Amino acid sequence: MLLVERHQRLSADFKVILKALVTLYRDPANLNYVYDVEDGLRYSKAAVSAVNWLKTQPEIEQLIQERYIAPHPDVEKLLQYPETSLGYAYASYIKKNGFDPGFYRQIKIEDDISYLTLRIRQTHDIWHIVTGFKTDVLGEIGLKAFEMVQTRRNLAFVLVGGSLLGTLVKSPDQLPNLLKQITLGYQMGSIAKPLLAQKWEEHWDKSLSEWRNELGIQPASFS
Image (cartoon, rainbow, N blue to C red; front, side, top):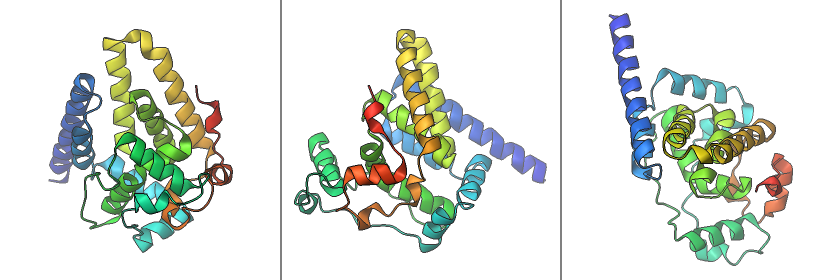
């Protein structure tokens, strides 16, 4: 019985991944579908393994135990912070791109996996700002490569894999640029301290350069 259930679970996971790769090939900017894929893979064996690994890091384990979730930031208030601060950088980024700080798909926190999923969604744009990766397709994949090594989340692997497949078929001349971003993201993630462990919202006033120095990130090397 257990073998049958495991086979069914693996088959379902494979179908979700396959559908994700096809969709990403057709429309790499389909954010709603990315959330569908993430939700579909949430309780896969790989997802459980990633959470167990994250919990071996004391700072992240503490965050998980606290179930730390910050309220949506007040963008206008953050624009009053010093221009060198993370808060100002975040607010400017949100305003410039026309984003909504609470646009990400909500999820009910029922366990460690759902908590981490929500927390990563909540801080996605902060990771963009701190690492320096842009919000275009290349930048998103570079950040996913960073996330691969930092969190081991299966979604990051699926998106990076899908981007490689799509680029290989549709625009192979762009492979060098894509590989450069993936390599850069992975290398940065390997060196940096865990971004998932940070309570950014409690230190909006800290300068962006100070955050980067403390975390071991050097975005100036980006092209």
